[in-house]
Image (cartoon, rainbow, N blue to C red; front, side):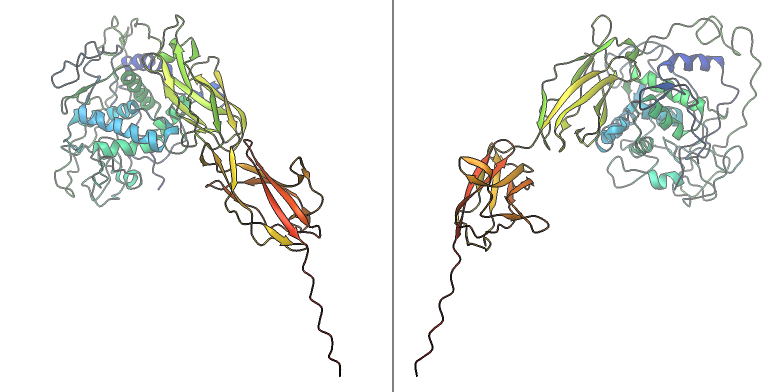
Length: 573
């Protein structure tokens, strides 16, 4: 099913200069329309993708913007905590169960789709504009909303017309569909995108754990990397094809990244200011299958009032957002970075197929040399090689801690050997990158032995009945995938290829006395092809060499062919 999180009604004329000023201030570091291409170039082309089917049926969203000033860190996060101070203290509080659901979804996506780099703050931003964090955390201990959250009836009256697809199972409406739950999925989208986030065996759009995980997977579709501005904007716009929606979500994302705290369930800030100018959606009836057609129905947008000198209606031009001067926007963490430094990375070296013992560690610093935290650093394996980070990813993004340090996931060597480059760059900041050299050595063996001790013999012109089998080890452990060469040599002191005696056969049946490109199996074992003998007799030598210097010499004995016994003389008569 191709239902996507799509366009809803764009923010109406009621959007004021206050909102515009807040968007400009809070989303400057991730401006809508900013696209980062693969080569790092940026463009300001319209980021809105082509229209697509809507997963919410054009249902409205909440347009309230975060305060321009971020809150200070709260002294505690337990019940009754004041939750910090500052203009944004109350808005920075996220209900405990809702916050837990977002963080659990981030943790699962970090394992199942690490290349997506989904931050829980993005889920929080979308949850804020979709339902006001489940109506201020109005959920039970399992994360299910105490009263289902429904969007307006999608009957074509001011919204899309979507006839019932779930027989009222999720939205209680057997005639039309409605957006459902804290992340506002319509039933047809939930049918394929729903997830079980709390492990109860059910996929319930009214459960914040299920809905948050489903939203995370939806945002991470395809090869999106949400640590990149282009991928982030595309993901948000896939949820709702509206530039105003993108502005709003990015504003909350930036606000939550600067600091949040936990508040008790049910005490979060209630949602308001719907994009269509109507009231908040009404709770659904308690019994599925019964619907009040007027419940949650939207009102037509109110016409906007003409602007007054100095700002929007009802605003004070002397205050931020009121048409007067505003406080300068502080730089984002990335904008504060002056350079990126190594943070004690050891020698990056590994054998083919093995994990590197050392991990790339970097530190982002400002002009004064102080570490800068919450900065995204992108690490890329450069060039055409099978060297990759854990999980097979060629590119990963890590976030610096409070000291400015970030450590990459482990690197794992493939079968390509040589020296390769791993490059670290600061996301959304044009600074010189930091290159590391990662060396991959061929698989090695320090010992090779025969697996049997039976003498290898055959008659001239025949073939050896018993195969040659060997086993390679490295530091006592099986050495798998080790490159091996087998040569029939002239003598112990002369390792050049012999021109007589035993031989192998190539694909065309021709005699050859050197085999290259052999490799040991997973247990370090290797069985050579069948060996044949020409007319020469005597003791011959087979030498086997491995990468790493292990050598084994095996004797092959060829005896003269047996002569046929003379036939008996005829009897005299």
